[in-house]
Image (cartoon, helix red, strand yellow):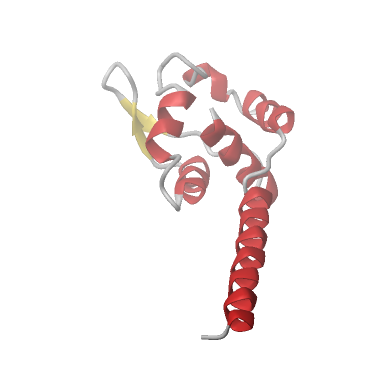
Length: 117
């Protein structure tokens, strides 16, 4: 392998890695204030605390469980839009409240904020 080809290959790899890093960063940016406002508007803090569990698990616990999963955002969005049954701290079950927006960007923003905690 020639030196020019090796240099070209290394430069191509570096540029690709920089582009991939920028893409990941763009995918994980969120607006915390907008996310908190959506959560507040939907009474999410009635059942979830940021650090402490209430009727549901704390957001930090949810984040710790899902943050490293590649589909963590999708899992949260599905959970807050499907109305599935959830088990509360006292052992009772009820349907999870469905968030009042269908906007994918707002849902993703909320999920990213939760995962950031």
